[in-house]
Amino acid sequence: MGRMNKVYGVENIHLGSRVSIGDFCWLEAVERYGGQQFAPRLELRAGTSLSDAVHISAVARIVIGENCLLGSRIYIGDHSHGTGRLDTASLQTPPGQRPLANIAEIDIGANCWICDGAVILAGSRIHPGSIVAANAVVRLQTDEAALIAGNPAKVIHYFR
Image (tube, rainbow, N blue to C red; front, side, top):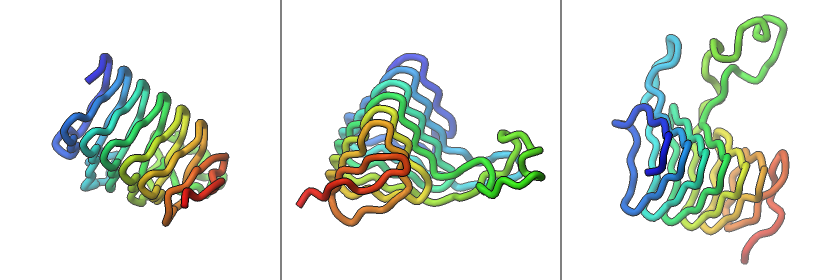
């Protein structure tokens, strides 16, 4: 475990053996937010390594498989602040006071490499052995190992 990390909801965070966590990481399994209640689970499986400044936020379920490598400055979250329908009324509410919405589990398979600056959003399912390129913004599901890149991210290449 690195320096200056923040960990919230530790009873709902499960670390496998040989998990490595860099500096300035933020792991949270959020049970309550405003008036909302959740049953979160955040799981980092054996051999997974997080570099510095990785933020993982679960209100539902996030699983990162065995032996994954996560670069620096990565965000993985299974929810958003507000519904994404930005009408005049919702814009009057500060983002931190909007209810959490767009909630969907995230599953990152074993042996994945998530490069620096990537963002993995709710509902993503990344097949084992995949690579997520630097600065990709991912909200997709893959059924085969793939190179995923872009904003919004798309499959660039399948590893067959």
